[in-house]
Length: 336
Image (cartoon, rainbow, N blue to C red):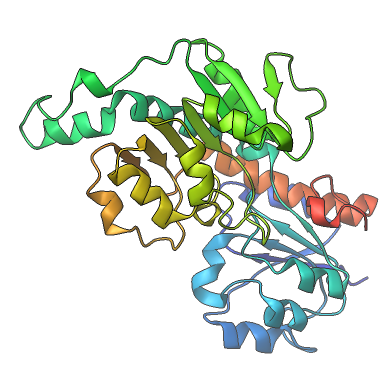
């Protein structure tokens, strides 16, 4: 009997033994070894080495070779493909509408990234409040702590954290800052069922109030067409003067030009960023702002989380093959 094919499109680093156990006797696992997009498209055709594929494991390391999972690529997938398991929480590199049109379900790995991303946000927030990044640069330049002034640094105890998007990452971050303690307020499309009472919900009609109360605003919303540029100049200016902005979500959720203006004119006290609009490019103006803590999109770069992400994505494929669907279907496709 010919087994269905599972195509690994991207590097599998940590779960080599587990992938054998997950699909033994259930599917033939094939590594995508095409050197470029042209070769990939050719081998997706009938008779090609990727023909017979029913599910695809997708990881961002495949982008340099085959590009984004855009309309052209998804349209070329074999007719039997019904599941794409993306290794990552954000899935803006995949054309959701093209998936819908072809009857393909897309899953991501939301829970697996929660702890690593939340601790990244915690580091960025602490560094922004205390100007630790500036202090480290001062030390490395041989100036000890002369570049840091206590006039502009603050303790976290008693401050108000506003979370924009209380999903798994946002909730984990809220749990971490509770230790200081900080007041936690949040805005999501709707009140989050099961959120603890100490996470205070502010609906759309109270969003301006939330912004005005925030000592720090942490962004945890996915990048979609309706969230691109969500944090506009208008929203940023509604934050109190001296507030801190932290972003571990996606760079394009924030109007970067407005962000930089607010830092340069002093409306924002500091910023902590792990993501940027056009990665790996970083706006040089950000590099010249001393009260900016900047990381190179390393929020989930731990061996622990990377393995959890690989296993979560692969398990979604196994569940699809065995049960008909995985557990991490993206919200836009959950009604299918």
